[in-house]
Image (cartoon, rainbow over all chains, first blue to last red; front, side, top):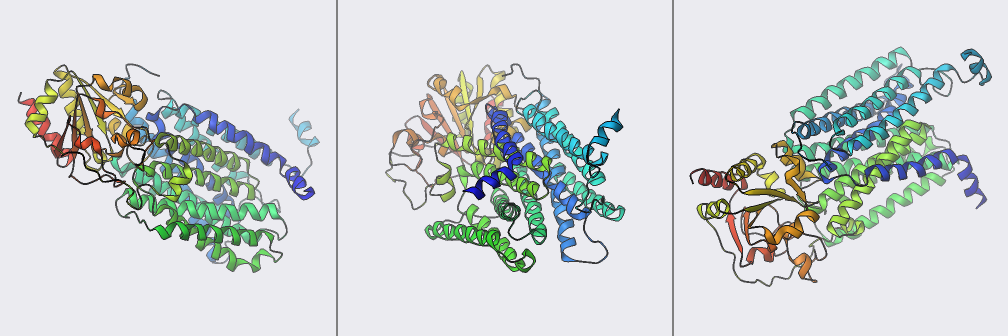
Length: 108
Length: 479
């Protein structure tokens, strides 16, 4: 029990962030019209490509003096992350472009 | 003034570190702001760009300012490798997203989700040897990032295959138990890794085994799921990728990753639950995948299906006042979105009131029909959600069902023995007449008999949706 409590204390900032972010996520998404479910999912998908930051850190501090499997996998991670981010935002933009070109007669 | 502030901060913290953290704060806020704007039709496109700007900011500041444990920034040669990898990824991603046909959109979103999961899994795999045995927290997040990322990756690849028609649903009653077993294996190996007292570099075999099991589990978990459950699973996989990114964020104590990831995870979970609610099914049931499995559908036929010719159908439509079109996955498969819009404009020009009734889980991803019809320039105020159209259905002269089945099956509200009992449906059977466009006389995805097709008021119009609609348009034009 004591260990558990100290674990909480060590990670208190992170736990605060998580708890509040979950509520924020729920708050932002609730009451979204069905029209926007697909672009919203696609946009959120692009944001989850934030793993790309991890890829940058990984490759950034990798040892480039010798060839290794780790290096290849790291570069691959970076490549995949970029695909997620760039592809995700671009495809979302394309979807939303279709919604935009019409003038809606009423909004909700 | 600034220098005095900086001097009071321990010397280990340089301006660069402060700027980096500040940029992460800005990025995180841009994600939240962007997603918020994405949830309103008017501001959605801007919102997407704001979120993208947040991502770009975090990428640039990380590349320029990040320091490792020894306080070294990223070297120029490494920076070159990073820029090159990103450049290649960006070009490929851009081309893919611009070449794709709008009808193939669900597949592509799924594929991009897979790449995000793969990146998280790889980061976990590569950071594991750097973890310290006994530090439960740090090993746990590494292992979790790896497992969740791997499941999201292989699961999304299978989802991609299914949406693209390359992978068929696989339903074996044994699969439920195999999946349960796999899940237990994942948990056991994960726990072993976390509590192991051996240095992680000696446990590499175990992390590779875990990686392999997680990949296989992802495949098996999506394999039996299909049809109307697809939007749920796509959304769930999306949430998983976000959670995996959060776990990786903990490895680096990186606030942008933690916040961005968990935010997407929470949003994805909510969307998943919304989809479940739209089908009146629990998430557990979707995952176990007992939808129509084992032939529960009672095959008591009620009468015969009656066919209608193109000319009779066009006469019926032409002399109606109110027509409601109910699209389903068949519309997407036949790529008939443009021709259906042509039909709707033609009828409108003859004074017929035409609207579209959109079921929340029609199609293969959340909001699939909306995107499809938007591509064909159907104004979005003509798309009416299920709850809004249902009270008006008895006043509708003709309900035109195009490639939809389970979402208009009255058994969902009338037959307690039906596997889909309790799922809210669009009340097509309340309309005065029903025309069903269907490829053949077979059953829908769930293998459940649809009593709507045998209804007195219903006429079946067989054929590929696109060809059938073209014939209708031609007939009505000649009137």
